[in-house]
View (tube, helix red, strand yellow):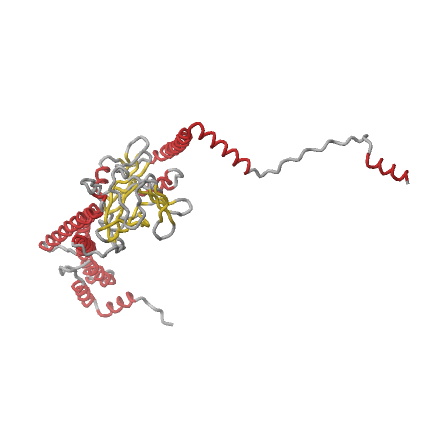
Length: 453
């Protein structure tokens, strides 16, 4: 019976048979055949060369020593490449954070309302993306001038250029009036960042839907509403809350939307006199009806945003927590896992968490200190008691606002409701007890009847 071997074992067997000298030549050719755009050897080439020579490290005599020496040199080259790649990743990460800052804006100046008018966003966003694109191109030129690898930068350049090109094209078509009448721009979205609990607004962005940077539009749902964008219509997106039944709810000012599944959320109610639900009628330029609420992390609450880098230099989203002692804490993954195990704090963490820009997070981190383990239990208790007190206060305020007659009416309604909701069968009256010595009237009547017969 022939025992099958892996392709790697087959190559190793052939190399052993063909000699160490041949193996060294093949390893050298492998490195030369694997290069990047600047014709520099890549990590993959060195890794394959090491695999080719590894079978000889235990060979007797000079062959084993020579194989170990060559492999050690390859490992040194791998370490140098890894350091250069980390440097590239750090550069790319800085550009990615700069790009994230290009989208959402809280600028609220001018008669047109700054971010309140999506037409203002397209010019500012496109210009900012082009500036970031120019920075990446300059970084590539600088690294090429010193014979450094630029593959990681070029990979990011490709993604950034796609987003910058599509936003620039939209800007040009908007400014030249080329957008079709009442055309719904499904490839883009007007992202209005609100608190889905109270509907307060803080900023907005115009984003290319589907190809926006990962995480930038996380937590947003499309609404059954559109805003005028020149002659075209721009879909509206807003942050959402999810209830225990799996339904989504979004709120902008006093207007609300709800729904389930992947479709757009539908109009629920509009207490404001301004209609936000008709085709092209979404308009938040009225600063009195749609006031800005400064983004903040309240006591016993979380905040999140992109800051820092992972092992590959990619931006990572971080969590901050403001304790009931008003101190701001940074939270690592281990602490997040502990929060998730707490019944009170897990609801906070899994509910609405305000999103901060990278610049805002950088400033907040200057104030933050690491969250100690012993803070979790008291934070949970205080936050729970605060939530119960807020519910009680809200109910007391509601009853107070009813007035005297409102309280009577609500009391009567509750009494009527309670009466009709009774499920117990009324207990029938107990018949009077029959004394054992009492005469049997029916029996006496029968006897008299038969006597008469």
